[in-house]
Image (cartoon, rainbow, N blue to C red):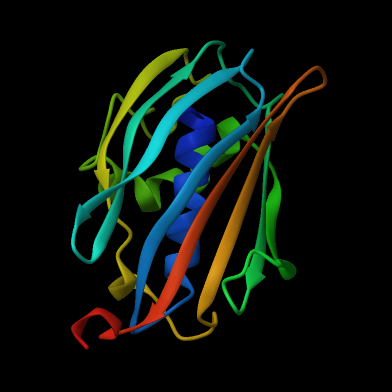
Length: 185
């Protein structure tokens, strides 16, 4: 799912982390991060950068401009491109809709300890409403070792929607899934 646009972007990162949780003995690499709309709620100035020869990471900041409560619902959808050619097919797995407060109470505790190493000024576990803030993302890297073996290789698009009655924030994170040892060849 990776709770503000700090939630939106963090939830988008969370979604990538969920993707990692469904794959095993693989390597994951960020390809692209985009905010499609919703700059009235949050601004995601996050980019993918080359960390080293075989790893890409997320770097940037996420500014949430409004308080987020349970009136904001998050939804995550996955799309898969087996050939990696951006011809995506909807993957029958989604999360949502879930209120931001429900997320911070029920799901966020399982992932907070991992994200706190990469993102400064995160919402606390159980924080509700999530207050406006700027979070700084520093070299967030996906870990394929935290995964199980059910999602195939290829290019994945994780789409996250954070919406209320008036506006939506949509972010997309593109992640490439490789077999373990792909970069050792």
